[in-house]
Amino acid sequence: MIYLELLRRHRNVYIGKVGTTEVDFYTPDPTGDRYYQVSLTVMDENTLSRELKPLQSINDNHPKTLLTMDRIGNGNHAGIQQINIIDWLLSNDD
Image (tube, rainbow, N blue to C red; front, side, top):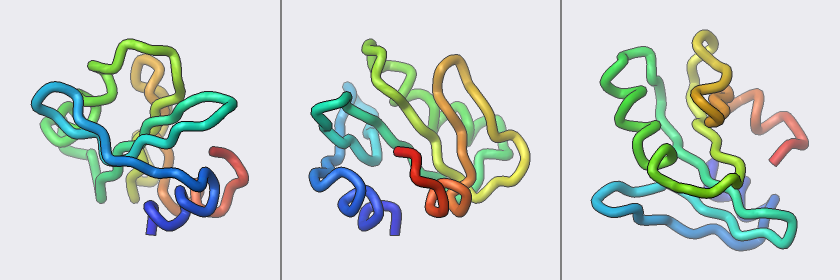
């Protein structure tokens, strides 16, 4: 579902690899590239760390987003925005 919505919003969607880790989705865009990780939940600290690691290893200033079904814990993780998937789907934001 996330992949299809990213295709609708950005037209081009890729899976990225950073060293030995994988970024779920990368969307090149004339206004700026974007990176997305998707996880059902990151309430467990180990899961949160695992999902943030690929995004943290990317050394550029393009937007990085972690999409989860969590309703609590959403916010900013050192520049990585955590957003509820449903809220993201209903928004016009990239």
